[in-house]
Figure 1 (cartoon, one colour):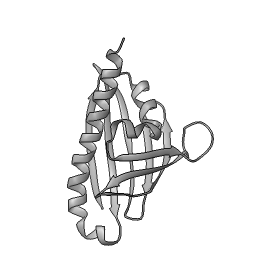
Figure 2 (figure 1 turned 180 degrees about the horizontal axis):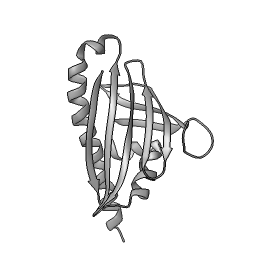
Figure 3 (figure 1 turned 90 degrees about the vertical axis):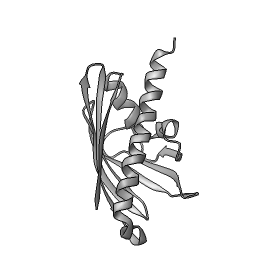
Figure 4 (figure 1 turned 30 degrees about the horizontal axis):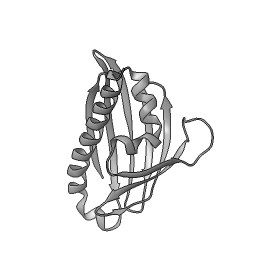
Length: 148
């Protein structure tokens, strides 16, 4: 297992950041590796909502299931993500700060099969990838707020 953690401040209200991130269907807009994300459970988004996603990794897509395990708007969003190659459990927290929202992430990543041998590399790449993904979310939400 490896842990991937970080934080970023987004100049938008916590409720807006939380709502946007909680709807996994938005991820292809700020994560260039995410090819597809769709909600597969019925009802409003909340605890137990499930999404099927397909990120592109090493030239091919890898189907993943994302299940929201805790949903405490606008403070906490926890999830479990499973694929044939790994399982990731963790949470995003959202804290109101000047000038907007401090979003923190903490993921426990458990590689499976052959990927298990590369756990330290998975952690290093995961930290870089998460920073890039959330930096793009920040750019997108802040730019959207500036639109007339």
